[in-house]
Image 1 (cartoon, rainbow, N blue to C red):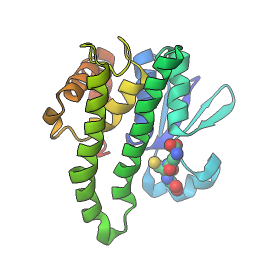
Image 2: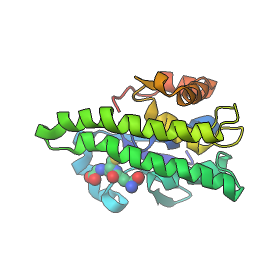
Image 3: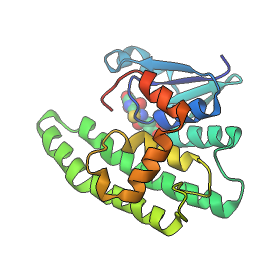
Length: 199
Ligand SMILES: N[C@@H](CCC(=O)N[C@@H](CS)C(=O)NCC(=O)O)C(=O)O
């Protein structure tokens, strides 16, 4: 296969890139390393972390950079710089949101519960609120983050926000955008058939 995407058996930082492949209809090798086996694999990877993507004999790292690269390649990233800025703005917000989400899993055992509570009670409303505000400013009634078609901005939001749909009704534009992406046939099939993971 031309593309190999390696990550853990989570959605996490790889799911948005997986969604780009899915939507583009481009087959990819979806390699998933079990977290418990990671110590045996760690040294084989550049920077000793995941995701990585391999194509054309090259190794690509950094989840958001990989997603943007695939987005540019397959038509989900605007060429206009103003539109591209709007996509990047969403991506940088989502990067912060992802860092907050991951803190729950990185926290020491005795702080995990408090960290999880903080994430759902403080961070989720904060970042969903940012996204709602962006959609309100930009929407124009079509429900995408940028322009009138799907971009990586929609996919990176969909990948994380779908992990916690509870309370989404408080953010009606975000809820509508999530439904719009979730109702695309290729995405629907992927969500139905992908490995079931908690995060
Ligand atoms: N900025 C990097 C962060 C990569 C990262 O921290 N990956 C974590 C999983 S989400 C990892 O590989 N952890 C294993 C380790 O650090 O040993 C990206 O977005 O790709």
